[in-house]
Image 1 (cartoon, rainbow, N blue to C red):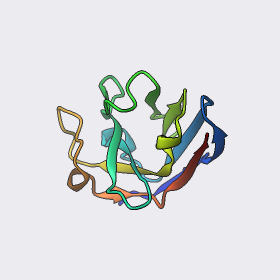
Image 2 (cartoon, rainbow, N blue to C red; image 1 turned 120 degrees about the horizontal axis):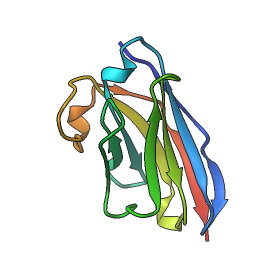
Image 3 (cartoon, rainbow, N blue to C red; image 1 turned 180 degrees about the vertical axis):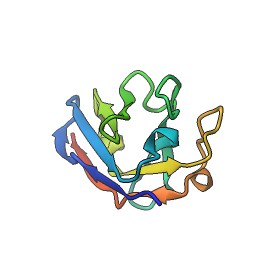
Image 4 (cartoon, rainbow, N blue to C red; image 1 turned 30 degrees about the horizontal axis):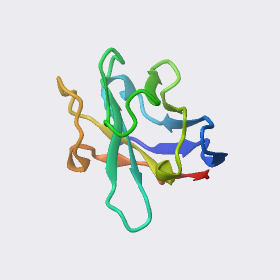
Length: 126
């Protein structure tokens, strides 16, 4: 069982930056693939970025590629999402998720992730 707690969300102006964090419980964090998803009002939850258990492999959605960067610190049981050049369309609740299966490739489907945090709100004003 893994518990995930996101933090660091808030209000930022367009063009600004924000880093959100996810703290994980459990001794097997370094065997889990991790992902960030987001859900805007009236829209489905979508994949934003994912990272392999070792941190060597990452994947980012086309909509955030070049602006967002996922990273992890296995010593701290934490995963991060650095968000730069934010746009109003990035406004959403951002969720951290854990995939316990140790896949060779980054999972982008919601159903691949067994554990979810409660989310943190990110609002980008124009």
